[in-house]
Image 1 (tube, rainbow, N blue to C red):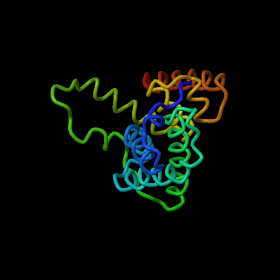
Image 2: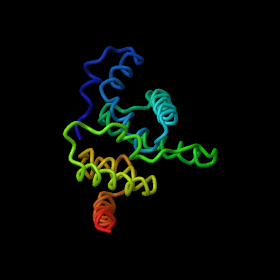
Image 3: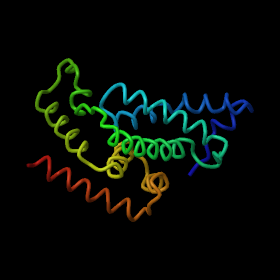
Length: 174
């Protein structure tokens, strides 16, 4: 694993370094928030909570590790906790396919669009750990990174990915 070079190039001020790193990797925050929250207000709340928790944890960040891996770990933990709190507070959740497909893309293939909607519905039914695992896998993270982020072994990652792929194939074929 390569250390994060952005940290070495960033100014010494912790707030400036944090903002530069957060800006560089902000898509992780939005990707995690969109994966766990369907309602736009909840999604924004979760993104803000992730950013706040990242800031609180930043003094403990070890620059020898990649920032994106560290960031994913915190973001996913915050998202899972947020979901637990959301369930307890009976928040309204909109189906993923409704938020992702507000407007069809030009020249969209209706069959491909339907398969994508079906895939999102399948993923939406996964528990938080499997959803996180699939999000990281689809983001082409290495099994080592996924294991580090989720706090499980690489062997467990490989096994779970294999099972998730089979589950998706089965559900998509049904």
